[in-house]
Every structure is written in structure tokens, then in C-alpha cells.
Image 1 (cartoon, rainbow, N blue to C red):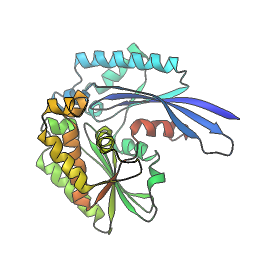
Image 2 (cartoon, rainbow, N blue to C red):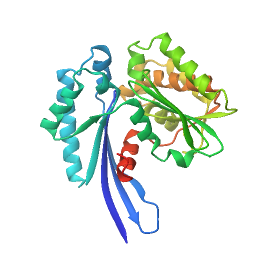
Image 3 (cartoon, one colour):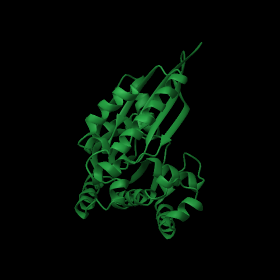
Image 4 (cartoon, rainbow, N blue to C red):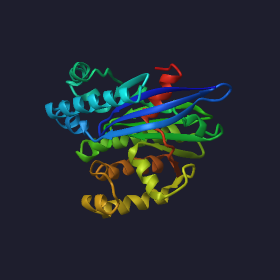
Length: 296
């Protein structure tokens, strides 16, 4: 006998907002299956407001309300039983973030929770990440967002260190990540990895997923440092318009992909990692799993 539950996750990031709808298939004696039913991504760059002006603009509040109303209707059509909506870096830093949450509650009937970097990292880590971790290996998990980057060091399948830094793609585009932040990240990564002989990176986020897709590799195969470095040089050699027309990148991906790759490259360099695995995981996947297993 098969039972199907429908859960949804809304991820309100600094670069885009996503609605993920998942069919959870339950069968006696078997692990539950999480099958993606629908994924909608809306490019509302909240970070541009939050990090430069300090507040979400009236125009973007309206766009958010429209998007959330649409998300609510989509969840109704899909007969979603339960959902959670989490907002990250941009909404954390906008001084009117809580006010925006209230407006959306009243206009779109969606309850949003603003979460900190630590909770964000923990939710992402609750995805299929543990299935990837060979217990005898050491992994540095790097999740690059628009406003911040979450780093988590796993050794023997357990979290050893975890930290969030205000170095994200939208911040980098606006030249808002000072040298002192880079130095802090470098020092932290080198310190936490120095006792481990070999470290492998696990990358999460829309940009590394796009880069992986462009590589044409099989899902479980890693990308090398050399490959990432050459792609970084290649992307830099193209204009913004060329990245859209020749590589087929979305306009809101074509600019942030370069600073994102820079973060992954630095993380590899400072940890001594030669390879990076790119599983298909993210905050929205983690939200659904955490809801199902009663963690949130």
C-alpha cells in the first residue's frame, strides 16, 4: 500500500525566491521517497535592496506579495498539505524585514520565518548530504547564497565546525565584501582544516549547480579544481551579454555566477581540496525533509 503526502517549501533568498513542491511516497518497509513535483523560481533580487539601502523597497514588496499570492494558489492547485516559508540573509538584514513578513501575511496569507545562518546551514545539511559522506573522509560543505556563505566541516560523518560569513554573490557584485572578510574566511578555513590530511568540497547553491550542469558530468562525479579554475577564467572572458546569449544563462544568473565561482575556488585553495562534489540539494529540499522528519 502506497501513501503520498504533498509538502512544499518556500525559500526567500537574496537573489531569488523558490517554491518547491514535493511528493513524499510512503511504502511499508521502505525508506520514504522524495519526488520533486514542481519548482518555480522568481528572480526578485532582495539583496540589492537590503545590502545597499538597508530596506526592501516598496516595488519589491509588491513583487514579493504577487509572487507569494501565486505560490499560495499553486500550493492549493497541487493540494499541498503542509508548507514552510523561510527567508535568509537579505530579509535578516533589511530593517523592515519583519514589517514585510506582516504585509505578506495579510496580503498573500503566507507565514514567513526569518532564519539565521546557523539554522540555514543545519536545514541544508539535513538533506541527502549524509548519504554522500563517506565516514572516513573529511568534507567542507560550502553553500553560496546572495548574501552569505555557509561553511560546514564534516569529519567521520559528523559536523565538526560550522560558520556563516557575510560574503555572498549579490554583496560581491556591489563590492561590499571587504578584504578583511576574505582574510577572516581564509584564516578560518585554514585553521579548521589543518589537522586533516585530505579535504573534499561539497558545493551547494544555484550557481555551482549551473556550472555542474554545463560540465555535462554524471551527477555523482566530482569537478576538479583545475576545471573550476578554467571555467572561472572562461566566464570572466565573456561579457554579461555573451554569458546570456552564448551560454544561455538567465539574466539574474549571468552576473552572480562569477563571484560565486570565486568563493568556491578560494574555499578549495584554502582547504587544499582538489575536487568538489555537487549534489542536487538546497535550502528548499532541506525544508521539506526537515518538516517530514519533524525537525522544524
